[in-house]
Amino acid sequence: YFLACYCKEDKKGFFILMNFMSRQMIMLLFFTLLLAVTYYHRLSMLKLGLIGFIVVFIFISLGELRNNTGEDANATIINDVIKNYTNIEKPTNLIETYHTLYGSVNFSTADKLITSATSDGYFGWGSYFFRPLISMLPVDKSAMYPLKYSSYTQLGTYVVDPYLDLRWFGVVVYNLLYGFLSMKSFKNYSAKKSPYYIIEWGIIMFCIFMASFT
Picture 1 (cartoon, rainbow, N blue to C red):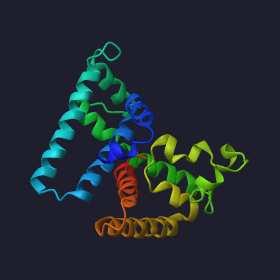
Picture 2: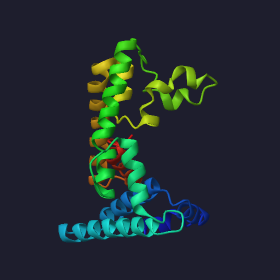
Picture 3: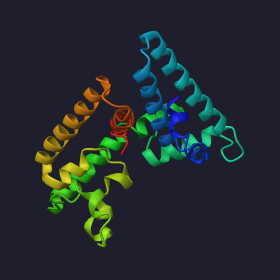
Picture 4: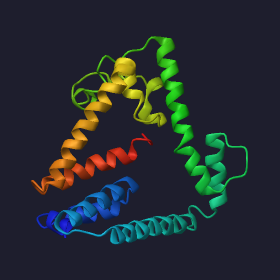
């Protein structure tokens, strides 16, 4: 219902989204659709659990379908490639390998980036916090944001950028700020002040969910 209202004026946007088929965009779409439904209708925990089960089933099915296509004919080959990337020596299946890649490996990467920045005496002095604004300015981004400390490129989790700015003070203060803004958005959504908060809280939920990845 929400998607139909959103695309009423520009139906091309819906087809662009479907053709793009980014997993991140699908996840964001799922969050906003679920929030839109619960905004207008109260759902029981049983229905929410059923929706969650269906979504997990669909994602697993799509993954299996993808692994059996001509481009990815053998899931074992994919698993071996990821195992080499994550330096896994013991036998694991694809699910275990992905869990390791997006779990312990990312936090190990964060530790490596933090250790490197500390030993080099590198400080961002707030440049990472204001990166969305600075990115619009005609400045040399590669010099301002060295690839060596890029948590986005290396999947170093959400801890690295605040640390690069103001060390552990930045980690504490930034995340308290993010928590305050998240709580404020959630309260506005719960109070049903405006349908706008469906989008805002959906985006924040998406960011929280993806925080351990990048």
